[in-house]
Image (tube, rainbow, N blue to C red):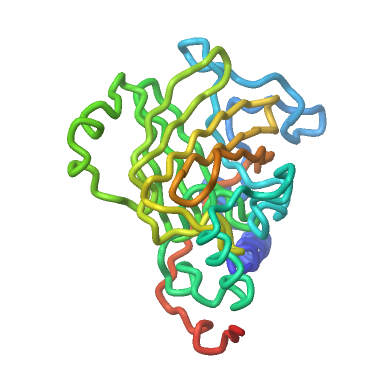
Length: 264
């Protein structure tokens, strides 16, 4: 919510300071190479753009189409999320405690997909032939998705090479027009959503990203963690393009809410 307020406030300042040069107004500017409607707005229903190699270009500033999945990532899972008994107990405890111990309440990073599914904090995808970056507005974080031919075989031969990270280690490949990303090596301190879905350091996340048209991106997340869940489970999250803008910088450096939060 803080970033939403800051974003609105910043836009208001830009309106008040209309005498400044347009090039400096990075929160509201007409980006080049955007398909336009007759009124000058971005044509969000235009076909997906293509990169030089012919693959869909996922680049852009995106936000979750709703806050449905930040509050309950498993809301659409048929039959409910398949918790192991001990993981179900952890989840019930976090719910009962109103999420008081969530890592972000202590200025710790949000992981995958939690840091992507908050509508008020957009992400930016920057796609190049050998590396795709996912930049997070919240906590000024980033992910590297390598598409240079590397694989996880070295980790498999020597698991001690994996130093668990907040956002893990990601490798991407194309399956026709779908960008498939596999992520491992995530530390067990993150939550999958704000309500408290847990995971272990054995978690493997597979994302299937499809740009449906210029203004919509669908990501299917599959979570495979035998230490926490009885089987892999998936959820599809829709993202919408935020045209003609850039990310703000959000740094959690003055946390004062936690002492006033009430658990159970």
